[in-house]
Length: 432
Ligand code: GLY
Image 1: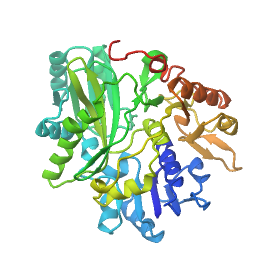
Image 2: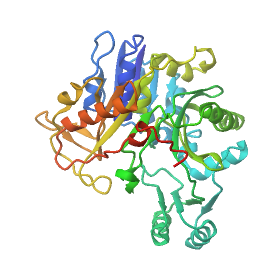
Image 3: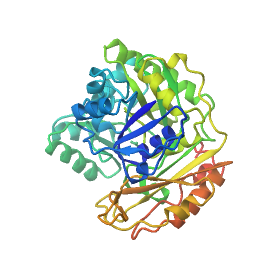
């Protein structure tokens, strides 16, 4: 099978790695890819190929897919999906794992997602959509602190502010309005958060294993929101039956509602959940794999990935055997550039990846990296690397991941030291 992967981050490196390990994949192409994906070879030893094609240009992506004779295109990030890249591929008759532009609006508009959830009776916080400063004031008064203020549209991980500081909530909302956007204000959902990725083929839902992400920049969930500073799976503290419950009450009704509207959802329905004192609630939907949760979820997936994604793309998920999982636990720790998330410093040499990968089970996934003119690997983004490890349990996976992180040398870089710490210590996060 010839596979073309669209995207450039550590999530895409994790997807590419899993695809390269699938014996069915004979050629692996990526656009634009990254220096980590460039080092991969297929199971049979054929090096991956990177293509300098704009991932947001559906016509160019479809032309590339045709030129390389792709049997499957996997679209990683949300922006190409919302821009309709999957539609261009489907129109060209190429199987694609990723929703249409209309279906990707489950991520592209928080107000739309709330409307679909209301129609499908999916449990979530009651929203108020605001288009004026006065509506924002009223909504902040109505819900009280902590305030949850979301950009309705895509905001590259910077759209949501959760704060008890009303002035901060107001400033965030007003900045969105000033930029011509809409705001969604909603009730704060207490309780630990869980990410569950559901593979969908428009009709059938196949859940992966749940993971937990760490969104704040610093230890103890302090500091600003980021794209995610680390993740782990499994979740020993999660209630039994959580996955079945989420498929039954969240994912399947949403997929059914999208099909009913004539905009079937094909791809990953990322259910961002809060396990609140009143029950499981959807915090948000995304229309793609999460980053960095994908790094740990795919590290544990034993079933070859390409056949599963192709089955989803072709509407055949009901026919595939149950997914198989390794017994190991997985932990990933993000190494971020100095001053991430505010203004990440770029262009610094990165060393120590080989040393990190010499630690048992550790693999290092590239995100914000690039090769400079003389071929040196340098930082080129906020989240630079995802250092990922497996272990017999979370404690062992954690220890190995942090041993790997210690090997990485990148001036000014920072990482959280508490990824998976509480879960590895056997804490009941639900009771905390
Ligand atoms: N881990 C958060 C996200 O992928 O949006």
